[in-house]
Length: 425
Image (cartoon, rainbow, N blue to C red):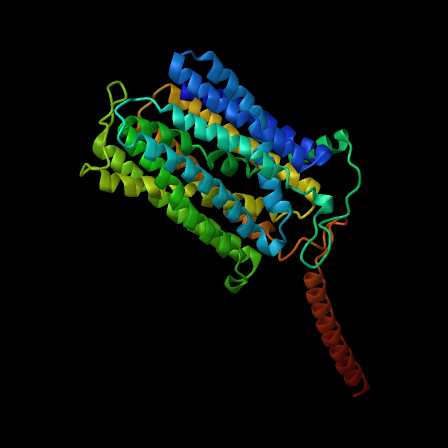
């Protein structure tokens, strides 16, 4: 049920994310986000229905609807974290947003863990579904607080950009233009790969561990992402580490080392167990001796979730500060992320050996590093504020530019005087 409904979800998600940037540009983030929220309580309700009656139609239908709305929610999320932030804060803003996301997921996992710790049943208690549905309905209040980009002001009082009215056709043209930019097109593979491990990890968690242990794993999965993702965000924005280009390259290098190490550890663990999906899993409990090593690898593997996506989005949005383009980039990023996840759910539904799945995602991740290195090295500039007419330059950046201009002018004057003196001599 999970593989089929999630396959439908992420399949629709791909197209809704691409279209969501147009909704963002025409209707603004508040309405787009409000619509995006509606699919979540409906989907949780469908899981509750399936748990009670075992009928597949509702989860599949709800999954497709959630795919439609989730594209709007996640595109808005990626847009606000990138377009609303200044260049010097983009890594931290995305890290903060992802941290809030996983903090919410950790809260949900803690609720599920507390309720199911001593239960003997295989399914999820009703109270878990009820708590999730209530929390997700309450989130509409937070969406109402979102300001449209043309009303947002930086600390210095400046606007993000000069906003003119945009038509549906122009917005679609901006999105279509992304597929003509080869710098963005070659980033499809990293975007496609960044979340593919998630269905595989969830499937393996359900197969290898008992109910309370996999609920505990879900909690630890989210908790480990909080410090790791925040540290990556701070690193990407730390001017002490050098230029934006150097920080982007360093972020890719850390991702490559961390994630490659996690895949190698996961490969060794899977080889030691040699799972056969044709028979029931070992149902490892958190009190078993086999759990200690397994959970360390599980957490290393899980921590790539935030840092991989954070670095990809940082590199993509370092190409522009213009909000209209940023919304299109956000939809592009989320669409290919969802496409990879949809493929992963589809693959896992056929129940291939876990070793084969792990090897496939390991290979795709390895191919992503040279692409990200190249784009970060070749196209990450100190600033994009001077390249786009509609973008408003922050005051502190203007002052820095003025100082640099005065220094250059002073140096040019000294060189001119020296040249005049040489000619006279």
